[in-house]
Image (cartoon, rainbow, N blue to C red; front, side, top):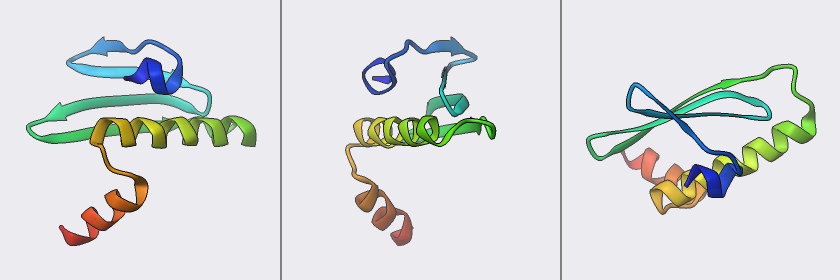
Amino acid sequence: MMMECFGCDAEMEDGKFVIGYKSLKRMEAWIDGKQLCVHTESNMDADLGDVSDANRCFRRFLESATGFTAKQRTKKMKKS
């Protein structure tokens, strides 16, 4: 799934999928029970084009992984 969204293969580290992509210095994704967990570190020196592209890919990844759009995820978080 990360290959489809970011165009690069993820490495496995301690049971977590890990990538680095443009302004995302590091992104870790893993499953904890029924929950998708994601931790990101940003490259604060990245240019605006890289930030925009990484953000678009990140949103696409979350939608693919959860099956919910950004609007649906926000609504779901407000309920909990």
